[in-house]
Image 1 (tube, rainbow, N blue to C red):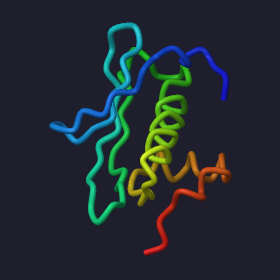
Image 2: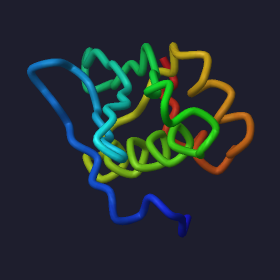
Image 3: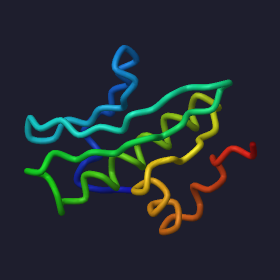
Image 4: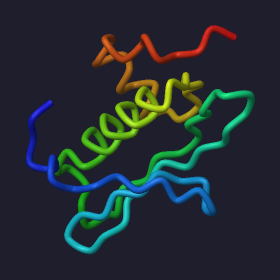
Length: 98
Protein backbone atom coordinates (compact mmCIF):
# COMPACT_ATOMS: atom_id res chain seq x y z
CA UNK A 1 0.00 0.00 0.00
CA UNK A 2 1.67 3.17 -1.16
CA UNK A 3 0.73 6.17 0.87
CA UNK A 4 1.76 9.40 2.48
CA UNK A 5 2.98 7.61 5.65
CA UNK A 6 5.32 5.15 3.90
CA UNK A 7 8.39 6.95 5.24
CA UNK A 8 7.23 6.83 8.86
CA UNK A 9 8.67 3.97 10.87
CA UNK A 10 6.52 1.83 13.12
CA UNK A 11 8.26 1.21 16.46
CA UNK A 12 7.67 -1.87 18.59
CA UNK A 13 7.88 -0.48 22.12
CA UNK A 14 8.23 -3.83 23.87
CA UNK A 15 8.43 -2.24 27.33
CA UNK A 16 5.07 -0.51 26.84
CA UNK A 17 3.56 -3.40 24.82
CA UNK A 18 2.58 -1.07 22.02
CA UNK A 19 3.33 -0.42 18.39
CA UNK A 20 3.97 3.30 18.08
CA UNK A 21 3.59 5.58 15.09
CA UNK A 22 4.77 9.19 15.33
CA UNK A 23 3.27 11.63 12.81
CA UNK A 24 3.93 15.39 13.05
CA UNK A 25 5.34 14.80 16.58
CA UNK A 26 2.07 13.18 17.75
CA UNK A 27 2.09 9.61 19.08
CA UNK A 28 -0.50 7.11 17.93
CA UNK A 29 -0.34 3.49 19.04
CA UNK A 30 -1.75 -0.03 19.13
CA UNK A 31 -1.54 -1.79 22.48
CA UNK A 32 -0.86 -5.51 22.35
CA UNK A 33 -0.31 -8.60 24.46
CA UNK A 34 1.67 -11.62 23.29
CA UNK A 35 0.44 -15.04 24.35
CA UNK A 36 1.78 -18.28 22.87
CA UNK A 37 3.17 -16.60 19.75
CA UNK A 38 -0.14 -14.85 19.07
CA UNK A 39 -0.27 -11.07 19.13
CA UNK A 40 -3.51 -9.83 20.68
CA UNK A 41 -4.22 -6.36 19.31
CA UNK A 42 -6.28 -4.83 22.10
CA UNK A 43 -6.52 -1.06 21.60
CA UNK A 44 -5.82 1.44 18.82
CA UNK A 45 -5.51 5.11 19.56
CA UNK A 46 -4.75 8.00 17.22
CA UNK A 47 -3.80 11.42 18.54
CA UNK A 48 -6.84 13.72 18.21
CA UNK A 49 -4.75 16.12 16.13
CA UNK A 50 -4.33 13.39 13.49
CA UNK A 51 -7.86 12.03 13.28
CA UNK A 52 -9.33 11.78 9.80
CA UNK A 53 -5.94 11.75 8.07
CA UNK A 54 -5.57 7.99 7.46
CA UNK A 55 -3.08 7.52 10.29
CA UNK A 56 -4.90 4.59 11.92
CA UNK A 57 -5.18 2.67 8.66
CA UNK A 58 -1.49 3.23 7.84
CA UNK A 59 -0.48 2.24 11.37
CA UNK A 60 -2.54 -0.98 11.28
CA UNK A 61 -1.11 -1.86 7.86
CA UNK A 62 2.45 -1.37 9.10
CA UNK A 63 1.66 -3.34 12.26
CA UNK A 64 0.31 -6.27 10.25
CA UNK A 65 3.31 -6.19 7.92
CA UNK A 66 5.61 -6.29 10.96
CA UNK A 67 3.70 -9.14 12.63
CA UNK A 68 3.73 -11.11 9.38
CA UNK A 69 7.49 -10.58 9.04
CA UNK A 70 7.85 -12.08 12.53
CA UNK A 71 5.83 -15.16 11.42
CA UNK A 72 3.20 -14.52 14.07
CA UNK A 73 -0.59 -14.55 14.00
CA UNK A 74 -2.97 -11.97 15.41
CA UNK A 75 -6.00 -12.14 17.64
CA UNK A 76 -7.95 -8.94 16.97
CA UNK A 77 -9.60 -7.58 20.11
CA UNK A 78 -9.72 -3.92 19.07
CA UNK A 79 -12.85 -2.72 17.27
CA UNK A 80 -10.79 -0.62 14.84
CA UNK A 81 -8.60 -3.59 13.86
CA UNK A 82 -11.68 -5.79 13.44
CA UNK A 83 -13.26 -3.15 11.17
CA UNK A 84 -9.97 -2.80 9.26
CA UNK A 85 -9.90 -6.55 8.61
CA UNK A 86 -13.44 -6.37 7.23
CA UNK A 87 -12.35 -3.62 4.81
CA UNK A 88 -9.09 -5.41 3.93
CA UNK A 89 -9.88 -9.16 3.88
CA UNK A 90 -6.46 -9.95 2.40
CA UNK A 91 -5.05 -9.46 5.93
CA UNK A 92 -7.34 -12.10 7.43
CA UNK A 93 -4.58 -14.57 6.57
CA UNK A 94 -2.88 -13.40 9.79
CA UNK A 95 -5.83 -14.11 12.08
CA UNK A 96 -5.02 -17.01 14.40
CA UNK A 97 -7.21 -20.08 14.42
CA UNK A 98 -7.53 -20.69 18.11
